[in-house]
Length: 105
Image (tube, rainbow, N blue to C red; front, side, top):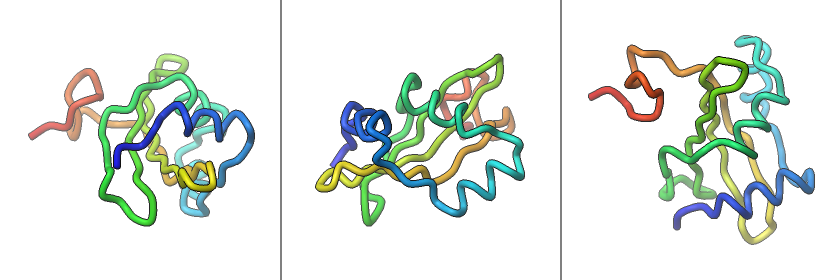
């Protein structure tokens, strides 16, 4: 099932979400702030759908923040209306097209 981005954003706004331990480690390693991640989720666009992910569907979100492109993988437990921030990173041109939205083939 494709994730409902609006429901995800509502969960984030209600502070009903969880940072995965992996995410917090990567944020520190990559010097990315939590505020940037939340901005990507609340204002960005979903560019890839991972509806077959388990236990919950997830997606890859994209937004340019302060001149830098960011990707965030996030999932939503629709039954409990809880979001999970899985990972985040700055996409690179060796893996993505110049718009940072499409993967290179």
